[in-house]
Image 1 (cartoon, chains in turn green, cyan):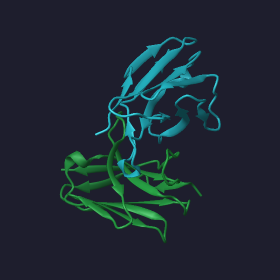
Image 2 (tube, rainbow over the protein chains, first blue to last red):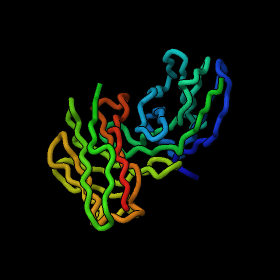
Image 3 (spheres, rainbow over the protein chains, first blue to last red):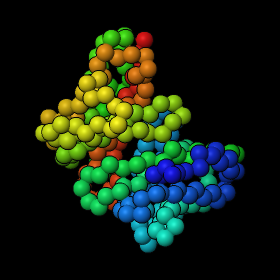
Image 4 (cartoon, one colour):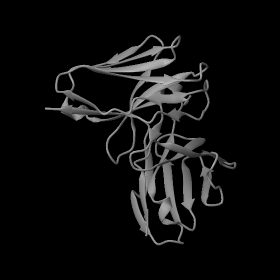
Length: 112
Length: 116
């Protein structure tokens, strides 16, 4: 089983739709989780950290399910500008500078 | 927020030559930086972990003599691709984390290397 798995997509959704991605991880001891956004031929940029209690930032909501070992990202009212690849990142360690693992990314295409 | 500067953004070099890529943390100190490589339509793959003042830790399958990493200060790490070959053509990205775990990792803008 891969350390971090994501559905590569692409997810093609109309503007205004709600879309959700999941990411599963294999290391039950993983400590911190993030969602990154990567535009074509650009560097990844932090979208949001994923807290145990879940967190919301505008149209974006991230959830963590430790029992089932997955994190999710929900995007409401999709915009054309949301089109990108969304990377799930898992940090196995607590504190310090630990080696993180990236998912392969889920490609989202929002269509007019 | 934390800023990581990476240069050059794009480089074309001839086979057999060496290329140096710099990664700087501009407003914070980074005792550890990470170097990644990304081939088209593939995920980021960690190449090595750069540690200030000590040797880098390379991932399995990454040749340490080919990809030289130097982390001489708390704000600068360099990756030198030695004796470059066309198969080394890729997108190289560095990253660092400012401090608290929930800040995530900040990435440099990446270097697109083309070896001809």
